[in-house]
Amino acid sequence: MVNSTDFIKRLEIILRYYDLSAAVFADKINVQRSSISHLLSGRNKPSLEFVLKLVKTFPEVNLYWLLNGKGNFPATKETLPKETDPSPSTSSKGESLVPTASGPGKTIEHIVIFYSDGSFRSYNG
Image (tube, rainbow, N blue to C red):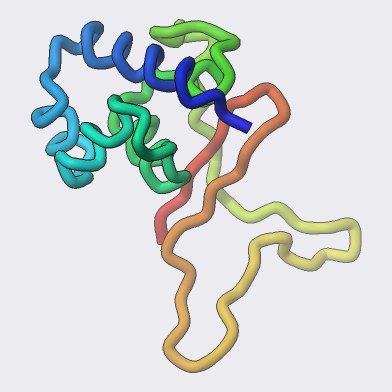
């Protein structure tokens, strides 16, 4: 579980690091300005969508550091996720491990893979 008080401190560190006001920060990650205000005041807790938008927009923000305070900020080149070939893996039976959409008109828009070291990889359809 994310400690809200510590998360707020780390969010404030990010704002100072990039020298951004809460309003400009909200615009950059495409969330409502009131969402940032509510997070900083402790009224609301961060949603997964908020966290993912933040780390996608600012790749120097280590996900594990943001959520748990462990790791580095800004992330060093060694801790940034490595770009790899996004081709699907296959199981030992030759089946694709990438999920498929089921139902008429359904397509996969976004897949996020979280690794045990706190890093992640995001794929957009």
